Every structure is written in C-alpha cells, then in structure tokens.
Amino acid sequence: MSVPDSKTGLAAVAEAASQAPARSLPPVHLWNPTHCGDIDIVIRRDGLWLHENSPIGRPELVRLFSTVLRKDPDGYCLVTPVEKLTIRVEDLPFRAVAVEETGETLTFTTDVGDTVEAGLEHPIRVDTDPDTGEPSPALHVRGDLWARIVRPVFYELVERGAVEGGRLVIRSGGEAFSLGLVGVRDA
Image (cartoon, rainbow, N blue to C red):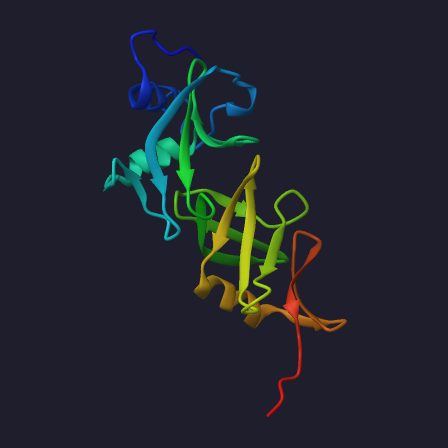
C-alpha cells in the first residue's frame, strides 16, 4: 500500500484506510512511520468521534478511521504507511453494542461495525471500580484495542451467566470469563 506524497493528515489517513479490501483491515501492525504530531480527533467515552470539536457525522468515515487506529506505548494513533498522528481516547476506542449467541460462541458487534467472537484470542474482562464497585466490562477487538461493553449488552451477559465458585461466569469459544463476584447483600 502506498500513499501519494501529496496527501497528509486526514487525507492520507482516509486514503490509506480506503485501500483495504472491503471489510478487511489494513496491516497497521506492519507500518512504522515517523510520528508527525497530533491531530485534533477525540473518541469520547460515549463512542462519538470528534474532529476539531465537531462530531464526525458520517459513519462510513468513522469506520474508515477505525481501521487505521492503533495503540502504541505512547498512546492511540491513526497510522498510514508514511504518517503517524496521535489522537485522544477518553475511555476505550470502541463500544460493543450488540451480542448474539450461536451455539457456544458469543459474537459481539462494535459501534464501528467490527464483529468479534469472544474466546481465547478475544477475551472479555471486567474491571471493578474499587470505590464504587461499578463493573467496567470490555472485549478485546484487535491489537491492543478494546471495546467497552455497553450496559444493556453487559446485562444480557449477566442474564446468561452461571455461578461458578462464587463468581458469575459467561462462556464463549471454549473459554470462561468472570463477570464478577457473586455476593450476598445485607438486608
């Protein structure tokens, strides 16, 4: 994949992402461009992508940018074969907005159109806020990118879960994932 030298910034990112075959992902893990600076893109906690404080209103464009998103040790960035632009992510870059159960596999759909089968390569994790006890569920999508499992989807998982050894567990792809401890509340 090559990007014409005349394109930079958002134009280069869009060009690089559009070169991937339909529904496949560009090989961003193989690209090692030099860091070119920051670009004013923010992925908000609620999943809204902003450019210069304005929502990116075209879902196709958000999908396109999501395909060239990568998390490096220095943060989240959009990458092309020739550029690396840092962006800001308030929580996690994606949200798991739907789940379907087929046989013994849970398949999640993200807000940018990815489908992910939970299992060994795509685990579910639930962190718990030490102060509030509030669960914060997430699903591994690709690379070092995770999706926040939205509350209604998490409730579906809780309903499907089974208590095992004092934990609520959900199974998918031959793996067991803890959704949290099961406790008895004082009345």
